[in-house]
Length: 402
Image 1 (spheres, rainbow, N blue to C red):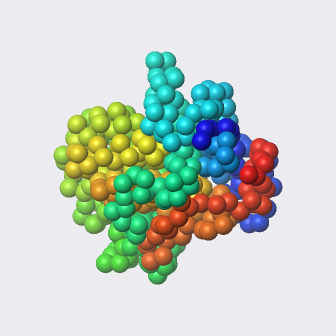
Image 2 (cartoon, rainbow, N blue to C red):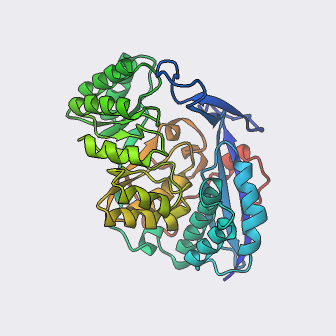
Image 3 (tube, rainbow, N blue to C red):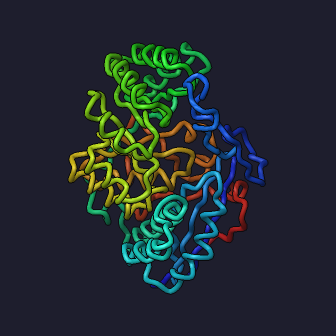
């Protein structure tokens, strides 16, 4: 069995799905992760470019005997960059190789640009798409779920938290949070950092109180605070009973995170921006995270994600699946890794899975938590199969189904 084809497909949809997407060209927009004046920061400091639509890059690997594996590269808002890496740099190295030599392939792809300084970012996102597709293919070839190939399961009953509590007002968010509790969620995540500190935290405290005893409330600051503000916010969140304080500082401030972890009693979570085991190892050595949040479609795929999780375990650190606007391929890859690692804590279930066709409308079997848990089936590979009509409608590239 040899690799015969390596292909990738850009898939784009409206963020809020109401029937046909009708979008054939991807665009981007700058969106503030804070209101800089309210935080006394430079106006451009915390602007991040997001796609105006929900968009992903899916990767398909086909063998000479017709087996197919699917992966996903977390590459918004420019999936064409990851697509070019896969088409022009990686595919020529992969054709004719044994698809079960997954670690050897990962090392070869990483080495191809390592000495040019490309060890993170879109390079690792592109590798992730290929790596996940190879694990899916391996599971299908061997007739086993991916979590079993990884040495699991520790459990196939995976606890989840809902990421995002929508609402224009605090009362709206309280109603939404209570509704999520009624659906069975026992944890949910709120964002801060988009307004004045006291106003933000007043709102968080109100939501925490509204669901106290029924659900934990996790808090994400998107890296917008300085050290003193992070300490002040963390102290208030401790008193309120928040579950964790995520990304209070910019991701580059590893020493700041180490000091914050020593200062606060609330768990400090970070790591969604890191892309490889060496970046995480620096955090672990400095004790700069109580909980890490690697994104399997950004941090090199299942192979690298497993190494990151096990190195975290050596340092007595728990890890959580990070997920955002993506497809069930992304989420399934994280779930299989979660099932096969001893120090897994929670899986993020993003609001986008409730609103965009890139999520559950794209597949034959939706991934939805029941009473706050998702259960992995005992089926080969990742267990994801696409609704071909929806896929074709949303795909910007031509695809022939195999």
